[in-house]
Length: 408
Image (tube, rainbow, N blue to C red; front, side):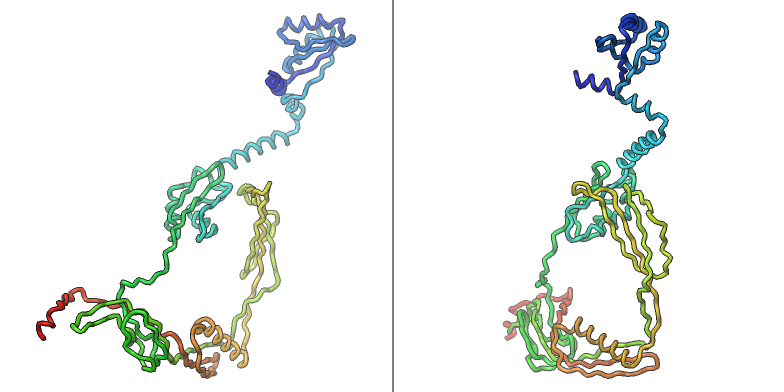
């Protein structure tokens, strides 16, 4: 009851009245006759004190003037008292309206997109696909097609087996279930030969499955069978298998590298432009007037979210730096072109010949009018075996094992 009484005093508003006892009782009787309730009556010295509702203050003043009473009024703290006190301060109602509008806005648009369950597919990739379905921060939740977005994300990534999208308030949760990775296995059911991928001389063989047709030291041409996937017994019965082997050989290889004498370089000029934006509940508010006027540039973006008790708020400061780049044509000397070609050769060997042993290298530089060409001849020892599937004829007749015995 006490709590209810406090709420009533807060929302209705009450006024404390003090009047001289000589007219106090006549004053109270007059108030009662007009339907004005007087509460908490008590006497202190020559004063009679009581409380009336705030809405009855105007009638109380009229009655006091009629009977010649001079009451002292003191209004208690209440919501009507605050509104009346600041009724001419327009910032307060405007602020209340703006706050109410902000609450309505934040309750009906997407503020946060949370992705859970993904390991192989990054958040950025999923957010990019969702944005194509118009699922992004600041979008009205009623306009989001959850079913279509789920199908779109599922079709965009082979790694995703199931997608579920739901919203709780202004937060969208994207639940991801990824498919199990397929084991890297060799299908041993597919019959195949091991053929030479180079014209080479065999230096080493290690056969796991199949019939070796060449020995160490033999020369083989490109595409020639080294390990056969076909077995034949004394009766002519053939078995097809998946040949597997490691075949090493020595072979020659030639590579050509090219360098123009006129090169175009792209360098940072040192000019930068910074743009700052406040992302307030998905509303982007520019904090400066800087504009990017560069034709060729790189940009770097940093987003710093505001946090409260360790939780990120939908408020962040975005800082974007635009760095101007310029292009310039330079003419290389003969020594610089040779250096460039040498670097190309080293990159090639580091990327493609790390698993091989380079036995011999011959280089030849050829100078043209506007370019230089480097021709490199290699003698290499490396893996030459490669699988080649056997394509069987569909109309092949079955072999009868006893036919050859009868003929003998």
